[in-house]
Image 1 (tube, rainbow, N blue to C red):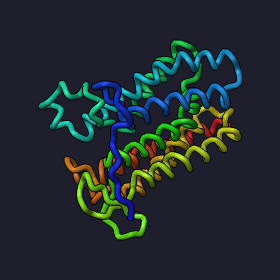
Image 2: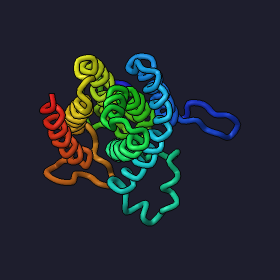
Image 3: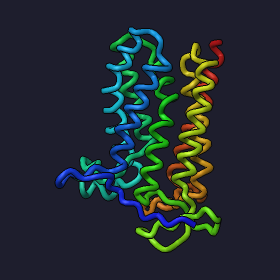
Image 4: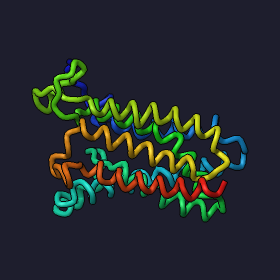
Length: 256
């Protein structure tokens, strides 16, 4: 058993606190951009386009992620405290909301640049696990999104929360939705990169599968609990994104 007593603040400059969660977003975007430019993208013109695309991507991630959390996970609270929606430094982001935000800004950007939106989304899909990995590690450090009770030898006590031994579900997600998904998508990208949209579809299918299964070890959100058939909100949305991934795979694979 491991005792989790990490400080969510990475460092402090005078009165300004820099949190691990913020660093996860910052370095996730930086590492993803570098990997795309140095490894995945070969043409100079496309490198320039992708560099311009990053600012749109950041907007999509932040606005989509925040609004997704507000609407899907804690709407009753934020409708009564609307100004706190802007306080993203206090935490509260939704992956599925960020995903929708990315799709919207990518579609808009692709029309401006007259480039395939799926070409860009495939690149994002390959490097997204980097950000997911860092984000889940920061969730672990913050003692948030913790797991359900267990007596397994690798259980963790999040002593800032309670004295219960729990699954380190954040680390499960970091491993499967982060590291393993990154390795799989990078391998497939080399095989399927000529088919725009295939990598995005595989990302949706695999991420949704990993998320759905791992959520059985994760404590449901306190303000929501179980939604339907003892499933969490994350699991229900993952079912939808799983079938969206299957549909996209069918559409793109049939074009070969």
